[in-house]
Structure formats: structure tokens, C-alpha cells
Image (cartoon, rainbow, N blue to C red; front, side):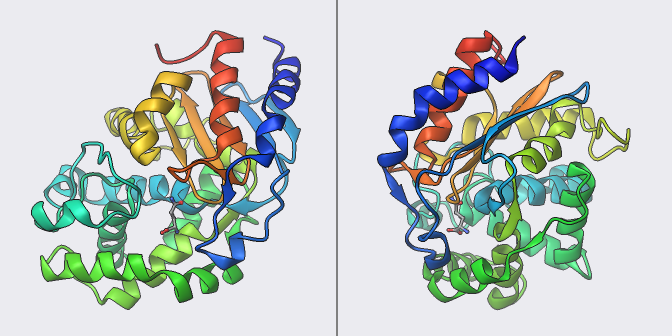
Length: 304
Ligand code: GLN
């Protein structure tokens, strides 16, 4: 497979989309990112890396971090997790409050904000230093010890994160948030505020393509069955109310963030990540979705 040529072709195809859509405005620190940034990285299980564009430039991973917290919580409490969060697509925006009232404070899935807040609450209950544990997982799975929190983005989101505070307080009224809301939000904004580049991101998801084992080090992260479940959740819920469309177009489990990143997993083969800051109406990278659709079309590879 000539990944270099494929990435070049994708870049040409998606570049007209850089002018379309909107950069996330509700987190002021994200609103100044230039809209013509675009990077893409393919990392294979046999250790090859292919890149194009701004693949080594850091960006805010935002909701992609929900997969790391899910991995940690799944490892810690296993199936007990499903008492506090569901596993169905929400069909609603990532920060929606509506379902929570009639579903009694149990979020639809762990990859929307409400679900991730519950998982963050569990991390706070289980770990002395949850922020350190999350960073350790990201560093270990990517093999890059320099990855860190971006404090400017975190501080910026803290000031404008009213909906997330509302979600957490609401769930606390149903006793599905057990720690103080300020503490939960502090850890949540931290994991959303991790800065990574496309190569780090694709590499750090390889354990999900490799049945729970980090290919470089051989280290066990989660079981084969847990890796299967996380991939299934990414396929059905990873792009919020655009998950069906993304599965239809790209045919891969993936996770997006409002920083414009998307990472996708092709089990037993590779991970591919893309960054394009301009977002469509559901808060997912316009160029990113198109690039992943082209990737599976041009390579002929997907989970289907
Ligand atoms: N930190 C963002 C929020 O909570 C993450 C949302 C996203 O990336 N979709 O609103």
C-alpha cells in the first residue's frame, strides 16, 4: 500500500473544506487556531508511520480524551460501569441535557459529555491523583513522555464551561455524581485539555487495534474483550449525533473532539488520525471526516 501517495491525494481532495464550517468558539482559547491547518498520520501495528501536513503540530484533543478515561475506568471497575452509564448512541449533541431528565441522570454512553463526567467522577473516587493517571496512560500508549496538559485551554474552558457544570450538578441531583462538582470538572477539563499531535494520537490508540496490548512495548492495557467493547462504542457513539453518518462514510470506529481531531482504529492493522480545526454542525472536523472517508475508499480497508 502506498500510504504516502494516498495521503497526498487526500490532502488535495479535502483542502477546499478548510474554508467551510466553524472553528469552536465556546472555548475561547480554541477560537484562534488557523482554519487552514491540516495534518494526518497513519501508524501501523508493524511500526510504520506515514504523515502529511501539520501532523507533528500539537492541538487540543478535547473529547478524544473520553476514550482514555473510559479505558481507565473499564480497567478499574469492569462491568459495574454500566450501572452508571449506558451504551446506546444518544442521537443528540455532545453537550445535550435533555435525555438526562427522563433517563434519571444516567447518560446514554461514556463518549458524550454527561457520560464522560460520570467516568471522571469514578476516576476521582478510585485514584488519589487522577490527572496523573490519565497523563500516564496517554504517555505510555503513545510512547511520548513529553505529552502534557495545556493550561491555557483548561483555564479558558473553565470560565465558559457552564453547560458542563450544569450537566454535573443535574446528575449529582440523581446521585450519579458523587464527588464535588468543581473537582469533577477540574479533572474533566484537564483531560480535554491534553495537547497532542496526529502522530502521538494515532500511536496512542494502537492498543485498541491490537486487542488491548501496546504493540511497541508489549504492555497489557486492557483485555481483548474490553478493547472490542471500546471499539464498538466508538463506532456507535464516537462522533455523537453524527456517529451513524461517520460509520456509513468511513466504516471505522473513531473518536472526535472539538479541537478538530479525529482518530480511527482499523483492528489488527493500524490507527489513523486527522486534524482539521473547522467543524460541521455536530462539532466534528469537516475535513477530518472527509479525509477518513477518502482513506478507507482509497485503501479499500475498513472494518466492513
Ligand atoms: N471539552 C469539551 C466540552 O466539554 C469537549 C467537547 C468535544 O470535544 N466535543 O464541551
